[in-house]
Structure formats: C-alpha cells, structure tokens
Length: 66
Ligand SMILES: [Zn+2]
Image (cartoon, rainbow, N blue to C red; front, top):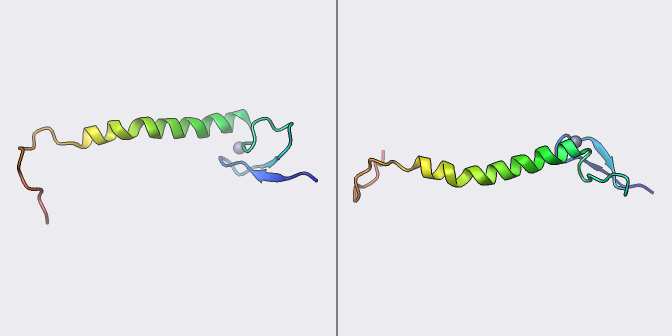
C-alpha cells in the first residue's frame, strides 16, 4: 500500500516512497521554490520593519489617531 500526499507547493500527487526523495514535494524545483519563499520572507521581515520607521518623526510626538 502506497501512501500518496499532495505537494505543498503545486498540489501534485506524490507517492510517499523512498523513490520520492523530495517528498512531501513532487520535485526538487518545488522544494527549492517553497524553501526559497520561506527564507526570503524571513529575511525580509526585519528589513521591512526598519524601513517603516519614520526617520523624521520628532521624539515624544503622539501618534496621529483619526
Ligand atoms: Zn510540486
């Protein structure tokens, strides 16, 4: 009995066997894309937060609340 899973990236059926070396992904490409997206997201988060900080905001100024 062979267990079949869906590739987390493209949804393609992948047989859960030793022959599927990239499981749960269907291929090396899907695995790399998914890992790359995760790594990029993790890397970009602190950078994005730094850029969101206004550099010209005067210290002690209360935030504008509509
Ligand atoms: Zn895939």
